[in-house]
Length: 496
Image (cartoon, rainbow, N blue to C red; front, side, top):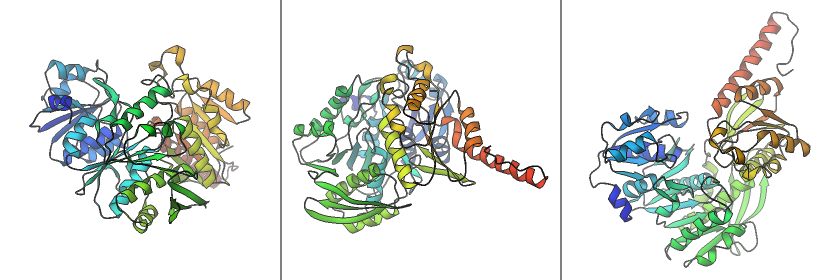
């Protein structure tokens, strides 16, 4: 624990309030604190499922909107989410009232890590899925892990758990910690083992360029203890150039021959991915998973490498991967209506969009793939990736791009243009459409979607509940067709 943490967290705490509680990690922390016996409240300005219902189920009262009134009961501690600015009414009030406060990583360290051994998963992509696979392997092996992850694991229907075992799995974010601590969140932990899945430029609102991001990971590696295990992705040049800073042992993973843990003989069918794993020159085992895409096989490989470091054998890992159900909002099927599959995914970075589309297309080779994308993050609403996004949609058959919903937050001179993305996609020969709002996309899809289509919806936000609205709209269209037929009216396809 740092001196800063000691100064901000009092010795005796009974009541805790979390500002911006509906973030996935903040919601998990709130639930864990509640489970540990604290009185917990929270506030947020945008409350939507699944986190809103998740918190309600756990008995946590969430105030809609930020107000100093939410702190009127003078909680013993305020946990401040990294989305909270110093001008937030509650951030101002907590300081004026002299309340003790801390960041989310500080709270995790103080209340949850304690004597446990942290398994820290970092990297630009794949953190949530890799963390989730590792957690389930530990659970399947009977090690009863704790975890706090930025996505809801289907095996638990939760993104947190307070286990009795010695390990806690933490998804380590490179994003800044809080308005009073601009360092990356992952620097707050002293991990027993660490994974770095890859390094790309992201978070353009806090990082100036790729070198700035690399520097954050360089600091992370330099702080790892010599006894801590580091598992790193071998095919990422940005990762590999940092490994010389590492004092202790490093193991790499990937498909290349120079990787310590290697992925080989990949076979994909309509529902299962099969692959072999080698550790050095030795065959380690053959595995299968229902996860889509080669990127998820690499996530699985990283989890296998960590599990072996923790003493788990190949048979236990095989069993766990077979029964791992995945993570909500990661290629999650939200419903199927009249043969039309509506799928949800969290993808927003150009690489994630590209790999997600590729994974879905490889699984559903005979289907028309309709990709629906909402640029919503502080980075995707900036033009930093304007020239790269057009390359991400090559394997989609029909593309729907929404105007960024929060564009007013971004300075006009650096704003992303969905219209230009659509124009660039058309230049590449793609069938792409631009939409001002979500309702227009829904109406278009109700008209154009056909049986056998996969509608892949990608956003890191709620996207105005597009999944439920689309499924409802498709159902109503089918009902109208049936009613017309019963009345003897000329029957027309609902997608005319």
